[in-house]
Image 1 (cartoon, helix red, strand yellow):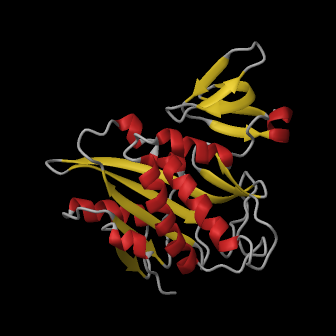
Image 2 (cartoon, rainbow, N blue to C red):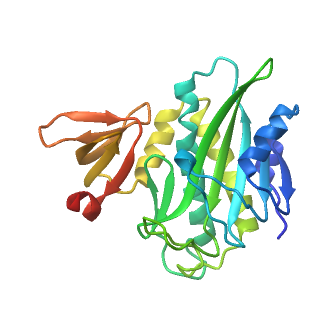
Image 3 (tube, one colour):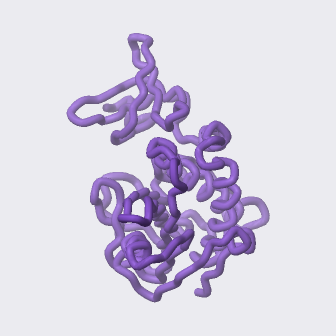
Length: 266
């Protein structure tokens, strides 16, 4: 597979580094920053042997899947709470890239891609994509964010505690390199909408338009307690807003989320 950037990404100053094999694209991206890389830089691996997900969980590798991380320099003065909303920028970009790769005019069924709060993409209710944001501040260099994006293109791992799928299993003939090029172009579009956080309301609207479980039952495991109610929206800080049975709206900043039948059963 030959990986290239979308012309819009190249024109915006993004660069690309491709490896045959890496432990983690995000680790490599941060190592490049520590060595003096200024970014923005996409790091791609044809094979990833030590990928990771949220809360230190592993991300299993299957040959032909998509593993890429963006090294993104944080502009001076950009508040951490605004930086955190880059996860929604990534979600919108991934969802757009997937629709362009698998939408009308391609072989396969009509796509049902949905964004699951805070940073997953689902296909037919099963996990297809994981997105991981990490930030590090380097002495005299400022802060950098890595946006790791793992997509199940050819296969999904077995034995997970949740449903997972791949594009191939769903009948879409897509390859990781073609999807990556679409992603880099969609990222530029979404990043410009976001406008260093000033346009988060536009990203929020785009994210909600593709949100999984919106308006339905949800349960969020937050530490040792559960918040149960209706998924009402996400707020201007990107927090999940749950309308609980008592009528109050509770904004949740982190937690494990279950929608629909899983929420009702819980």
